[in-house]
Image (cartoon, rainbow, N blue to C red; front, side):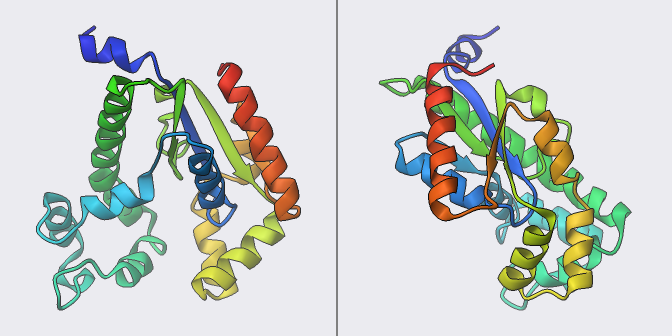
Amino acid sequence: MTATDSNARRVRRVALTGGIATGKSYCLARFAAAGVPTIDADSLAREAVAPGSMGLAAVSARFGAGVLRADGHLDRAALGRLVFADAGARRDLEAIIHPRVYDAIGNWFSRTAASRPTPPFAVADVPLLYETHRAGDFDCVVVAACEPAQQLARLMARDGLTEADARARIDSQLSIAEKARRADYVVDTSGTMTETDARIDDVLVQLAVKCP
């Protein structure tokens, strides 16, 4: 074990996950507002395919110039139509993006561990944690969950999707019920904002004491 590895273990690594449109971003913002170091895998994924990056070159080589906009940026809508209609294409995209994202998360935890004062724990928002079989990289997992009907309605309203398209995106992920079953902590976002905030605050208290 290197010195960096040893230091990194001093910060408990917490993963925040859930389903699409179940309130992960809200939970992450609440953690950050409480002073917890946080990082968002979705932001890292966008950086991985920024113009001029090796990630974008790999995506273009696999999916063709049709997934690029005229300004050289990734056309996320065009890529989304491809990968959510084809499980093989989605796996190919994940094989390009996920290793880069997890490397960045690991480096971030190491930098956080080296900071002074060292926080007791830090939180990474990783939407596809269970789907990528990386839960073992973390000391514990928090899942943001809501009722399936709420998830569908939220996704349709947020992204302007048809019901069929929204269901396809939801069905591409492990079910919320299964994610909640595997979690160490669950934040139920089905109720009011006040109720959600109270649950997040309760989880924060528990994480400050210990993490399995």
